[in-house]
Each structure stands twice: as structure tokens, then as C-alpha cells.
Length: 456
Ligand code: NAD
Image (cartoon, rainbow, N blue to C red; front, side, top):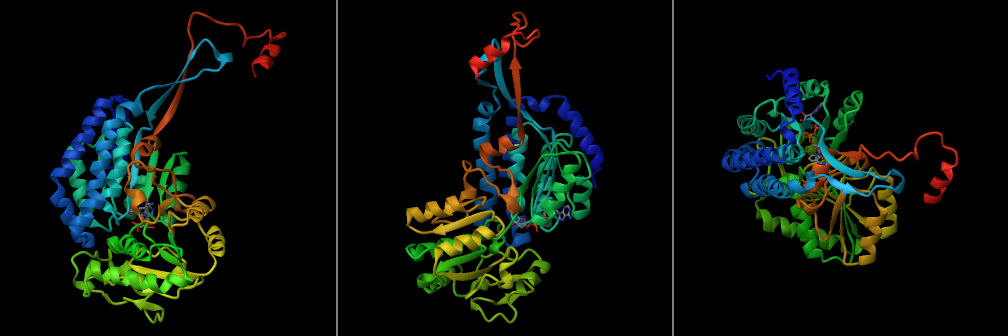
């Protein structure tokens, strides 16, 4: 294993050398990363297949393509983002000039989960490096093939004093967290997020916490049910439901709930055929522990209306619909993070909104309706990180939409410019001419207060 203390020390020396302040240097490094991602495409796809059974199309669209888009967009705008920004100067401070500069924090730690192992290691990294920081990344030990390929890719192109991947599990993560960092980015569960925030507090280190939660999907009676069903089925069962912003559960209006369930079943059959287990397009559960956790919801569950079959050898769990789920059911307690989809029915949207207000704030929320006032009511009255109207999960794929949670689902944002903003801070500088020196601020004050009264 790398010596963590030495790496952090060397990165701090490298950062203090000022080399990363040069925007040209940063763009060169991002282009190096882009080239390496492209030339390692085969190895990345193969690692994702081994870890999660990810079909190449899914792996490319949700992991590789997002990184390449992020690099392209960032390189195009980086000069503008980093440039000094002149702002107004208040009358009482004149003569003078006010400038805001964007400055990197320094040495940044990024700890990642296993579900999109490649994308979640590298997407924040693009912003971290673009902002002019050095970085240490710890991928998840639960996706070992991906972790290995990320380590190979990054450690081959960058020197350790600039950017280093350190592989390992909880022990390594703890050792990393015991160091002094200038910024910590963490993506993972809310429980571990709390541990990360606590250790960051020791050094008052700022954090980006991208956590999980139970993301609801409301389907109102006036929605196009066929389209809603297809979009829900796609966003839910992609990566076998192991997506932080996957629909965790459906809340559907009573008069359309049966039609919705039927349409979701038809969509599943059209995606994965009648023999879902043999489909090459459905991912597997990451490991036995998560398989057992999910399987425990299926045993003796008389609410399963579709699916429910499993195969522990291949870690297969069939996309499963659970109806009539009730709010107090056990499956409604924790984030599901798998291909199980509870369906709750409602009669009064007002009471659904009140129930959701009382729950922890989710990472995402989805609403299917043509009713504009209802769209506004839900978006304005509920707290959630982000979401979609008449779609699922797509908000995360846009470089132009800041991504992140609120409350229990996280702190901070990244994607495009918001990532650059997160990993840099505003350094405000007031420039005063050295030769002229108005006497207003200095004693004796005498009647000067009257002048302040006039201009305030
Ligand atoms: P996790 O919290 O178990 O692990 C995440 C990382 O933390 C791993 O690298 C792991 O090695 C490390 N870790 C685990 N225990 C630790 C400890 N005690 N101390 C220090 N580090 C520790 O999460 P996971 O199971 O890998 O991922 C699933 C969770 O991540 C879900 O809740 C999901 O919603 C969330 N997630 C969120 C986003 C987002 O963008 N908001 C994206 C993907 C996943």
C-alpha cells in the first residue's frame, strides 16, 4: 500500500509550488485524462461487466460518456471561470478596485462508492483538477475490478504528488480521513457521510457530501401512463436499481395505479424479454450481502404482484413490483438500492405532499403529470436535491444542472460549472491606490458621521 502520509505531504509541496494555478497546465491534465479514458475504454467496460454485469451500452452512456462530456465542457469554459471578476466598489471605499478570484483549496480527498464506480471517481475529479487542486481518490473495494482499472489508469498518467488513486476498504478510508485535507468529497451512504463530516470537522475541512435516500415518484391521474411506465421502468431498473437517484417507490393515484403497473410490466418485458434472467441488458447485484438484504424483502411477501424470483449464484434479482405497499411497511424504512419497486396508491395529492414533507429530504423526486399548477405545487412545496417532471434520473446527465442532495441526502453540488465552484473558493481582493489617501476613515472623526449618514 502507498504511504498515505507521504503522498499527502508531497501533494501539499506540489500544490504550494503554484504549478496547478496555471490554467494551461490544468487543461493539459484534463486532456491527458480524456485521452486515457478513451484508450482504456475496453478495460473499463470489461471491469464494469465483471463487477456489476453492466451491459456495454449502459456502462458507456452512464459512466464513460458523462466523464468525456464533463471534460469537454470544462476545458471549453475553464479560462472564463478562472479569470478574475471585477465587481463594483462602494462609494465610501473609493478610490479603489474590487476583484474576485477563484482559488483552489489545495489537496482534495475523493471517496467513492461502488454503484457507478468509474463515473463517481472521475466526474468529481474533473472539477477538482479543473479548479487547480491536487487529488487523492479512493474507489470502493466492493467493485474491485473497476477499482483496479481506475488505479491503473490514473496512476499511469499522473505523478503521485499531483493525483493518486489509493485502493482499499474501510481501514484505508479511515486512515485517509485521519489526515488533514483542504477539501473532502464523499459519495456514499448517509451513515458513512456522517462519519466523513465528523472527521472533516476536526480540521474544519469543507465537504461535498453526495448521499442517498428514498426518492419518490408521484404519478398523477392525468399523466400519459404508457410513457410514464416506460420512463419509470428504465430509470428504476438501470444498473438493477443500484442508482442513488433511482425511483425508490411509486405513489400513484388510485384510479390509474393498476394501468400503471400493467404498463410497467409490459415495459419490462419489452426491455428484457419474457425470460428476464437471460437478458444481457440487466445488471447483477454487487455482492452477496446486498443480495441477501434485498432478498429478505421478498421472502413470504404476499404483496409481490410481479417478479420476485432470484438466483443467489449469479446474484440475479428479478425486477419486482410490490403492491399494495403502505407507508408503514418495512420496505419504506430505508433506501432500497435494488430492483424492488413498491407501489403505494393515493386518493388525495394534498395528503401525499404532507406525508413527504414529514420525511427525510430525498436526493431526487419525480412527478408525472400534465397539470402545470400541480407541477409547480410539488416543486415549490417539497425539499429534495433535484428531479424531473415526466421523466426519471435524466437531471443527473446534464452538465448544465448542478447535482446534489439536501439535508440527509447531501451537502453541495457538482457537474459542470457548479463542480468548479465547489472545488474552488472566492478570494476577494480590494485594490487601493498606494498614492492617494482620503482621510475619511481615520480619527479624529469629528462630524464625519454625517457624511456616512448621507451616503447610507
Ligand atoms: P458506503 O457509504 O458504504 O461506501 C462509500 C465509500 O465509503 C467506499 O469507498 C467505502 O470504502 C467507504 N467507507 C465505508 N465505510 C466507511 C467508514 N466506516 N469510514 C470511512 N469510509 C467508509 O456506500 P456504498 O454502499 O458504496 O454506496 C451506496 C450508497 O451511496 C447509497 O446510499 C447511494 O444512494 C449512495 N450514492 C449516492 C450518490 C450521489 O451522487 N448522491 C451516488 C452514488 C451512490
